[in-house]
Amino acid sequence: IQTLEQLRDLYAAPGERARRKQLSRIDAHARRFIALSPFCVLASGGVNGRLLDASPRGGEAGFVKVLDEHTLLLPDSGGNNRLDTLSNILANPAVGLLFLIPGFDDTLRVNGTARVTRDPDLSRP
Image 1: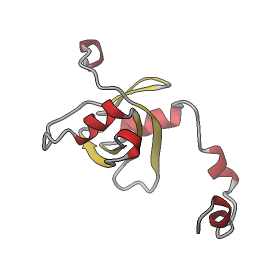
Image 2: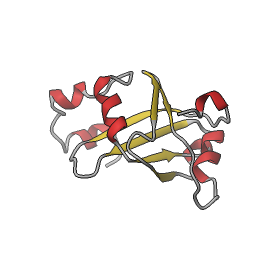
Image 3: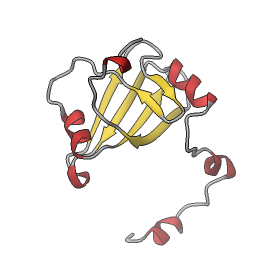
Image 4: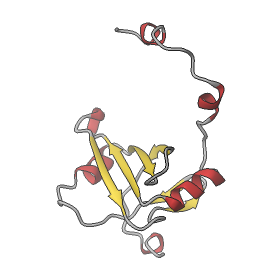
């Protein structure tokens, strides 16, 4: 399989619900899902999409804050100090987040751009 057309020929067309689920902003449903989620995976890629990384992030439910309909605040917490994800963001700000709620079958995906900051106004609860 070399083309999108060849791939598409192997699958049925997506249903209406699947087509409508992509939004350009964080709506009330997404805001609630994020507030209930104690875990997400942050995916990033370095220069030219190389050095891909999928990093688990977690805390108490709602550890990711919704600042507005286009902005999430994701705190950094201690890890292995390799800085793979943060280095990737410096080189290529495109990221994807996958939010999960234990015991719940749905997930929430958020794609966008990220930046690393030490702005104290953004780190307040």
